[in-house]
Length: 219
Length: 219
Image (tube, rainbow over all chains, first blue to last red; front, side, top):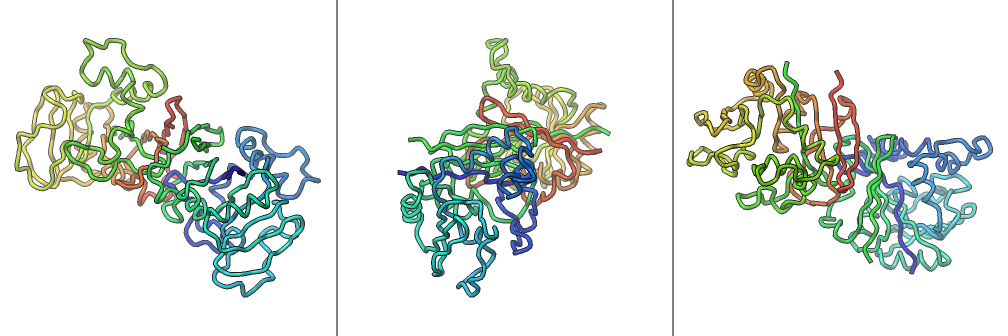
C-alpha cells in the first residue's frame, strides 16, 4: 500500500495552519506570507516556482531546503482539499477556474480534489485533477491506484490533514512550527488529542527560526 | 526597574499550558506529569525538590538543566496566580492551607499571590506570601519593591502569564514546547496575536524532545 505523506505544513506557535479571512487575494487570510517565509528562499521552492532557467542553483541549501526538497521525492499522486484548488464554494459555476498554478501545475502527477460538488476530470499540463466526494479511506485508495506504486502526498489544507489524521491514515507528517502568534484562523490540532501516542517524533530547529517536526507513524 | 521573568512554562504543541480537570490530586488536570517530564530529571529540579543530602550531584546537566537552573538566578521575589498557591476557589475558608510546598517552600523570597479574596500575609520558612488583589502593573510594582533590587519571577499559572503579557510587562519569557497534543485545558496564547512583534525569539531543541523558546522583549 502507498504511504500517505504530509510535507511542509506550517503552523503558528498557537496552532493555526492558516489565518482568518481567506480569499482569492489572501489564500492564507490575515497570516499573509508569514507561515511560509521559511520556504520561499529555498532552492526547492525557487526551482518549483517555474523560473528554473533564470535561477539554476539559486536559493538556500540548508535544512529548510532539505525538508522542502523531500516534498516531491517518490510521490505518485496528491490528495488536496477543495480550498487548495481554489477559493470557490458550492457548485462549480465557473469551470474556467483551472487552479492557482497556470498551465503547468507543479504536481506532474494525478491529483484527487476532495469536493462535495461534481465536476469532470480536468487535465492541465502533465497534471490531471480528479474531483471526487470521498471519505478519507476511499480517497486514499483512489490516489494510491493512480500513484503507480509510489507514495501519495496529502497536500492540505489543514482541515483535510486533520480528517486524515483522525482516520489514522497518515504515515509521515512534517510540520513546521513558526514562532508567531496568529490568534485566529484554522487550527490544525483540534480533535487530535493523544496523537503523539501513534507516532514517533523527531525535532529539528532551523537557523531561520522555524522548527521542523517529523511524526512517523508507529507500525 | 526590576525585570519580570517567566521560566519553564511548558505548553503542548497545541498550545495548552495545563490540562482540563485541575484538582488537588491533579494540579495539571488530564495532562498529568506529561508537560513537566523534561524537568524532573534535571539536577536543578532534584536539588530544588529538597533531597539535596541524598542527591548531591544527581540529575542531568544538559540543556534542560541549564534552563531549569536559570530559574532562580537573580530573582528577589515571585508573583503567582492563586491556583499555583492552592486548588481552592472563593473566600479563604481554610487558612490552614499553607501552599503545596511544606514548611520550607523553594522560593526563599517574598511571593505576591494574586487573589480576589483577602488573607493576612503568611510566613512559611524563609518565604512570605502576600495575598493581594492587584492589576498586573501594581502587582509588579509591589513585587519589585520586595525584590531588593533583583528581578521578579512570574511563576504562573498560564492565565496570570497571559494577563502580564497582554499588559506588556514581561521582559523574559521561557516557553517549553512539549510534542504532545493535549486537546483541552487552558490555552496560553489566546488573545496574544502578534506577540512576536514585541520580542526577539531564540529557539533551542533538547535531546529530550522538547523545544526551548526564549522570548526577549525588544527595548
